[in-house]
Length: 205
Image (cartoon, rainbow, N blue to C red; front, side, top):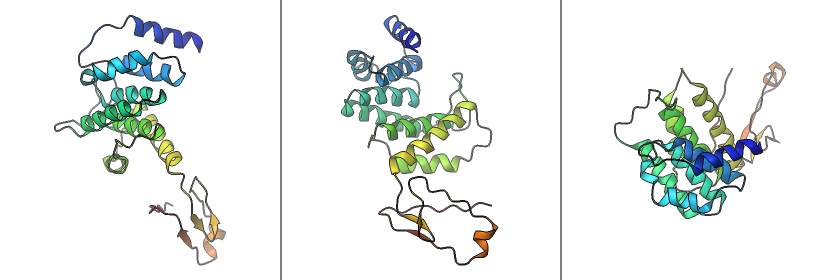
């Protein structure tokens, strides 16, 4: 693990200048920042000078997350806002994979994940979540699937859902309940939400 971090740091030390790229730099900075081994000067340089040159919304979100790990929430929120604007940009193809194996779907899920992880308020989480759900992707790449799973986990961690009960039993922070034939034979089944926020109920068989 230490060798991997050293390799990322060495890559940053010799990183060339770039235009419309920088995905590898953003990833390295995020990982190093999470481990407390990034240079705050590097993070701020890329945020203040090179933010417009990063090619993908995910790269912007990764750089923002790195800054948030170091407590610079103002710069982090600025980058997350840029990431959302890039996702919403007119003419963005929401159906194709790019040469870096990324896609609109992956980037949207990544921005959701990272913004939730660092509690950024610059991203409209509800809007992006709804749009991601409505995309109804059927042919997910590994990255699409992985980042969408991480987005769900982060959203659940952030929401700390509480107050949802089935027949009086609190479902806790992970509101999933499986009902078997015996459960269904005893009527009624009462689902209640006593929490402060509205909650979607999904039934599947």
